[in-house]
Image (spheres, rainbow, N blue to C red):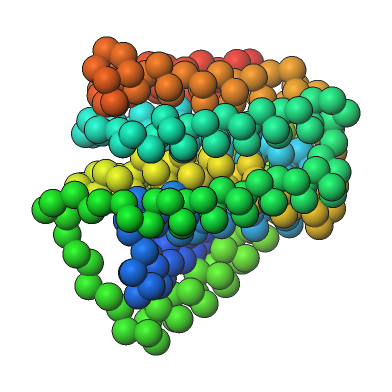
Length: 312
């Protein structure tokens, strides 16, 4: 019971921390006059990936590498199979050209890079983590240089900027809440795995990954409600890129991450690659550059199948 409460309280702190960080990050980017499509792919993605980063670093340092890996792989699957599905079930999304020219290809390259590094020897070494971080750096430079002139669609709400002290306050509160939440979540997750006799991977890929994906869900649903659809899809694709390149890259720079449960390599990673690839044909069929409720049902079905297979 105590472990369950730790997980619950940890998730609440992570959600609150992610939300505070998101507020301050978007406000800072507005003060710097960065276009919304770039905000979605960078600032919002990084802010909503902060829970994964904190949890993965602490898990790896604490000697629980499967929590770190399962959290990222599970979050990437949940971002597309659960978060994107819920978002497009609420409202269809018209997809920008940058999706197939930049965003999706970079996500697939990042996914295949991770697959290549981890599948060959079951470990992400420090130099491999460095390659991932360098790739992310060049991607960000490209975004800021070539998508800086992105057009903001008509009728978009211009958000009111916060006073500087509030931005700093949200930034600080967000950081503290993320750190405290990750402490409780990892302690509770390891405890639950021990109590129920399942692997850390199973807990990470279901409970922990969904919990750390809640900021993405909140950000995407709010973006749809406020008609900020450029932020919504860009946030999810960007978040998956950040999870792989920043979260695993930075974590493995601190300490190499080794696979403990082999099903992560024989099962989970293929689900992640499959659902990442599937987004491209779904965007083009049946209607070009659009994701609708039918696509949402397909993605949700795949996600539920993945959870069923993982728990079976």
